[in-house]
Image (cartoon, rainbow, N blue to C red; front, side):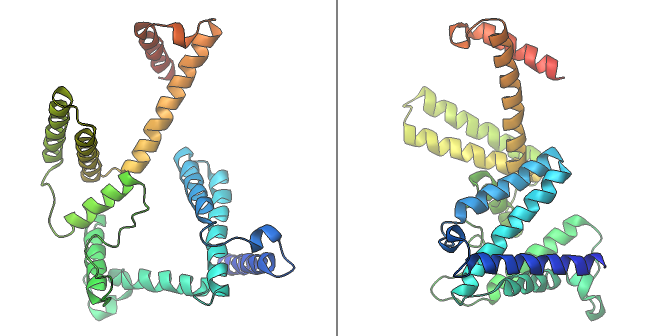
Length: 274
């Protein structure tokens, strides 16, 4: 059996299992779910996939991708029961989109110019997406360059994609160094507010501007900021936990220690990590 045949059979089995779970004599829990109640599970599985990728745990990734795929099949089953679309419609939609947005691969016979670099591909991809948006006609919800970016995305990731879209029409800093200068400006504006009125609303606004600029610096440097932030969180967690354990093993309490002592232990944790 070829891998393609095996994949098709496994996917078909998963769809059948999902339909059985939702059948009148199926699982009570699965039968009471809606597309809204599944949202937290979709989000949880997404982050578990990302965690497995961050750890390069291939066995975990295999399992998490299955869980992630199950959520897609579950949602499609609910939509199919409501008469909206089936999982086949979703698969056909992404297949058609991939062919449409890769004319340099699938439309060479039509005279499409070859693309030699990933940067050229990204630019062409955004051009095609812009053409698709311009071709849609929705009087109630007119499409703009940024309207297709999901508001539910994590804020840092959404800032990254907003920057990508704006850059696709030339609205961008020329060099990463220009963004660094913008970050310096934003830090100075925060300092002015803190040293001045300390107005909470203004502080929040300026901190938001700073984070937005940092997300764009990450983009200019080829770094996906959400991934970088997850790794930074984990690094801090590892070091802090090591510091906490070392202090506990010595019979001390962190609450009773001076900041200088905690900083010394933090530096020890960093050195031990290296």
